[in-house]
Length: 257
Image 1 (cartoon, one colour):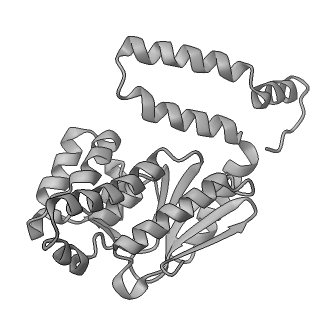
Image 2 (spheres, rainbow, N blue to C red):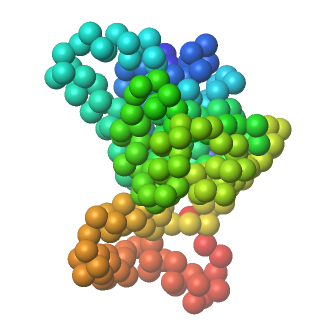
């Protein structure tokens, strides 16, 4: 992989965007390598939590505009295929079978802001800016919109998507776009400590199933979602992790997952 680095440390998988000279812009090749890296992490038994991070000044500047300009000469069918390529990446992260933490060391813009938003948790430096700037260049935030509406709701999503304005890390946190703000010096250690806590104190099976359910119930009716929840509840009771966890609690034993 040329644009992505993949490494493991203490059951944390690190997927790193490595196209700093282009502000980690989302080219076709970079998206393909990201999908490949997440597929690898999904199957990797050594990985329990994934951290998505980046080299360079920007976390991700969104679509590669030079590539986007090139696509304007492509057929409609070719453009649909390319759009699906990006859609598959966002859906893969959103429904990923392990917790994904975004480590945001610089600006996250347009598709890059969407990339951060589909992660389960996000840590950002105070200097980082966030925003969906597509409307300012005559483009539309089509794919990221679907996930942002789920994360923030209609009113906050409209404010970001229709204005195209950039917001500070503090504003992004207030709106629910990111979770935590830290300093550049502490970013790496704060993310590592948080990831380590999830790795050692939480059941991987429980986190995976809970994440799966969060994605699924939002498209169901109230009755359907409760029926689904009841079935999943019953299945969880019979799981090895649940039996192990309850036994440890009742026996007052410390459990290390």
